[in-house]
Image 1 (cartoon, rainbow, N blue to C red):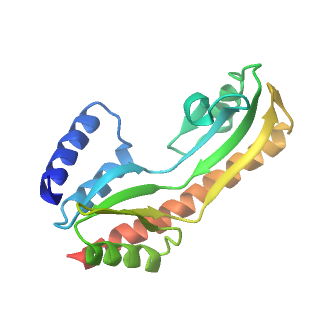
Image 2: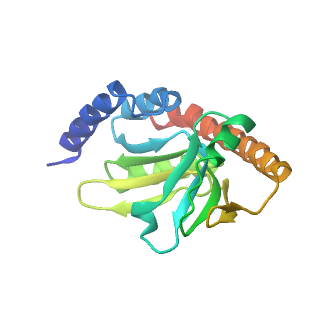
Length: 194
């Protein structure tokens, strides 16, 4: 199976995921724009998010971490404090996170991948990179440098006060907003790849 067949199969799966509301609504027009380009298609995406999670100390975090709350919109204090009511008493770390927008884009060849990567970096997406290379495709990861990954508690107890939590949410929402602005600068520059 070559690049074109892989692209067709992936886009069918994306269409099904969109119908089932499994794709961030705000990122769909961006995916459509990239997928309309001949030498590219998207394989995974997120418009960015803020959230609070429990990461177990004694189990595989990839399998057993649990979101207490996660928001692709700019979260409110009320949403954050409601999420904190769901803390368990297990052996875990409680982490406040902000993940910037991220996209994985399959490129037909190394020249296409290089053009996509250079456009991303010149648009301000400085953490973008080539993630994998195979005969079939090259995966480019599009990512900003913005990220928050802050421990706020452990074993069912929060160690910081409400004022710090509010500050952390405001700070993270502002970083997510800035990350999305840079991300959209890159999206607006995608026409240069045609």
